[in-house]
Length: 288
Ligand code: PAF
Image (tube, rainbow, N blue to C red):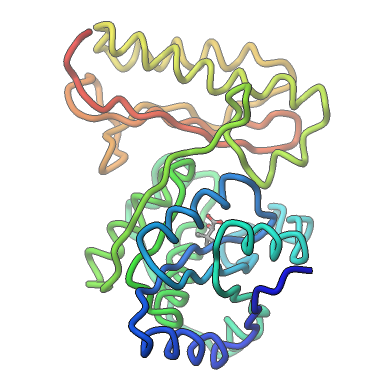
């Protein structure tokens, strides 16, 4: 077992952060739901590169799971997570219970408006309200100078950016790049649900995303044609079911008809029973 301290109570984490701040340290925060992998480790390393005292939060947040989602079976691997955090340079783990985070009489939530209605929104009603509420609570508890989130959760990152802006949260947001397996599959705690045959099929998602991005970069501007190619190729993955595959405005995540601004190609697809998400951006509109 690593020597990294684990705080379970809000009071304990506040005290530890206050002591670090009094010593002049800059506070970083990496919110996670645990089941940590190399993608999370890279977020912690990114936080450590720009701050001195990194708090990794580990909390499987019930309010962001729908009734038929994987809340109860979501992997909980605290001991291994402590090792990952320590190796990546975190200074403190905050691993509260649900009772600690959500008093039974809680009424206030963070409403994310229409930003939560696109992409993952329709199939995960209430998800981003739950994400923003817990992230806001973690920001209030840790009061970090900088917080790091992964680019794989593209919609989450954009919504948190809006929340920080709209609610004047004094934290610097960093979005760190998606970390991929050697075959291109985006790292995710949910990859462990895949059977070996599903795992062998899953890298096709990123391959298709790259191919469609390349078509856009080589001059195809028509979003309907690009989306049709995107869906067509994804639907050839055996035993898969497409949730959505869309090309949207990179900032607002609203539909576009032409690649005439920075765009996001985002996908959610069930491979077997496991819902995987991935995305790539089309950063510029100049044809190559
Ligand atoms: O990305 C995640 O793991 C979660 O949505 C987050 C940001 C930790 C909130 O529970």
